[in-house]
Length: 118
Image (cartoon, rainbow, N blue to C red):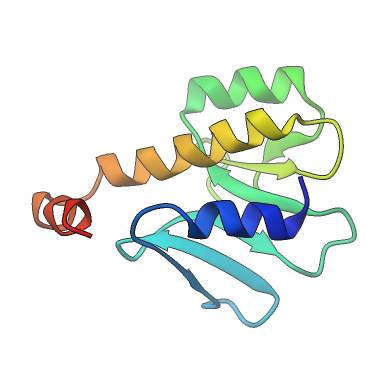
């Protein structure tokens, strides 16, 4: 998966906005102002950070050398994923969806209602 496809898929999700809170070299995708994906733009090897269930993270890291604990993030809950080679696009999409759903599950009832009405 290339960076633009990743970006377009994230932005197509309900309630998602793209921000640059860490400078112009890192895109951050948020739903209801909560991060679910980070995309550093300066890396030689395109990679993204996605939130994940800790047990699933362990499975993914054991199976794919391109998936590992995210740099500067809580490695129990965040993975870095090299998206350009070795990880199937279907799995990357599943990981994006999973990260998005984990964040939505933690929203307040008010925010969940606002998101449902978008």
